[in-house]
View (cartoon, rainbow, N blue to C red):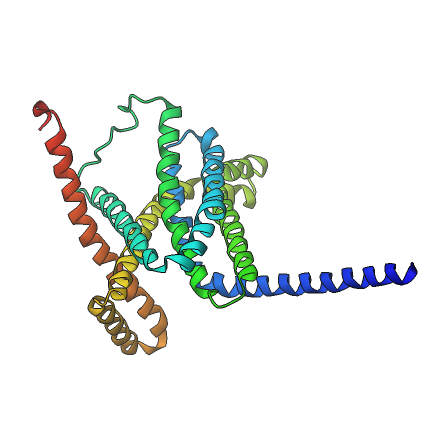
Length: 318
């Protein structure tokens, strides 16, 4: 009887060691894959705060939580299983889907950019003129944020999958799920801190009035509005960058690689011109040219949508 118990305990110990080794493997592969997706995660963090700008301050954290909850659901329940299945049974469809996502980001980014520079007017009502209830506005804001997050999340997860495609399936699934959880919590945790920074500054200023910490609190309060505006700009530029990258890389996958090669050669030439900061210059040039390409494509789509809206509007509103 004692030998049976010892054998059983031996089996448990062996399984525990195997599980620990598997977890170590998942952690190592997750770290490796995360470095490749970090740029997209930064884009996601930059894009999201603009969706809670203008929301009732009391509803900012609940709104972020709603977006984060759907982001986690989409990554874990929809995107990861779909990516694994498609990569196994229909790998040819992944590139077209990513290019459709690139078109959406190019359109949304170009429309926001053109509104910022005053080329086109915002086609929606202003906050003062909007006849919808605050709840309806919040729901529409959440829907818009979830759509954009879904595209960015899809790219993050597909890019992660491409980095772990050759490892065992169980570890691959573990890495995908780990990336989904860590990135979602990280992105929306940072976003929550950003949008509530003004409350922290006010509390600091009141609690330490007349002292250095109180002065820091006042600086935080004064700095939050311009910082949020800056994030709106960064988020829009991020959409253009990611959208352009998806479209250019997708074209290269179908044999039309001239734009991608030209951008790479231009970036390399710029990097060689200033070798002291070559890698940074190369990244900046690739990013800028990808964004310009997306702005051009998105501008055409924006013009087409404006024409459709104009033609569908009642005759008296033309």
